Length: 540
Image (cartoon, rainbow, N blue to C red; front, side):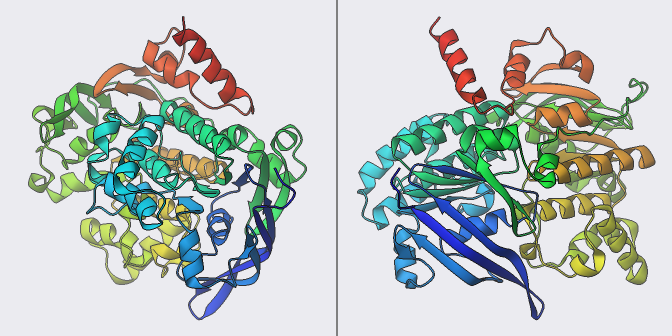
């Protein structure tokens, strides 16, 4: 590293518009980054992590403005530079990997076309060379069929595969600085290891600096040289990673470091007719098979965690349950009675009983509707609520998800943080008063503190309303905290299933053992040690 920093942000103030007023988001934060250095930026949802990361590019989202401070990139004053200068830097020398790949790719263009656009436009390499480079980076990102996957459209790959394709795309021009905004949030633990390893290797190989934004403390421990902690737009503390892990100074940081305390009350063993049952389900998309003779049960007051790698069929099983995907074989039963396989043939009451909280809040919330309408629509449609009764229901749900009604009820999704959007998705599912809720990675976008609150909320609602949950997740810590039963899926098949204590206790199925061994630990040497162990095993 040289003495001159690559990036120097001084006394940054950023404001967001709320109605006719401007409210502070970032309140005088400093940030310095040397070439080849990785800075971990952590804090709970709404702390300003993503806003500060974008400001490193001299950029703010609509409705925000940089009201004070200076951003110097390699001697260039980004805030004083022309629009053309900043445009030339973005993509070529400064790249950004967004939290939601699904919301960031153009759905009308193939992955490889979107990859090659930036290096070709910036004159880094011709199209043919860019295509070959894409295949190489797809391979390093452990994407399946790297020679062919680039010719798919975004909707034709899984969420985890799409996130890896975006990471490869950001690296196309070998930039000097990359802002990683929760790049492994959508990834299962086994895939996450490969992506983290690839990111570390490329950062080291090309002496690339990086800002790594995350709420996963075990991940930031593997990636960052230094860690900066934010809380509601203020800097809490900053220190080298090992020093921060060993002895955080501030109370807030110590709270973040604390192990998740959520403990689920032990539920009685499942008996009687299941609330929901998948029986011999085989399904796919076109001629591509995804689920292969899948069967499992979900009982009242119980939570079934469905775990497995990206592309294992977890979300596809949820689509079959909700009638969004018609299986080629098998049936779905609700309280012992078969459901029509197509949701369009189910009654309104059958539709009401099963609701879904989606993985990507960015793409599942209508950006033109305010929270009043987003949360109110299910209550209006299924429960017939109108006027004051509907307003009261929406406000009650906002209180449940810890968003102050008077402040949030008339906001648009664009005026919320990622974690707040996810909580709105939870409120929308609850609005219909269902018996069964599918939770598709509902805590993946949330920091540890907020996630614990959401898990406690789901527990409380389950006990009060006898709810059943299908909890799709790749977070084994969440499985330990929330599940009664566990279903492990691999390549569209159920590998292992049973009560949590049985599935998570040795001896394990080899695939379950792989998942459990891939959970990151709060040890900066964990990833290096794991990769070496696996390399030694592979070498015999």
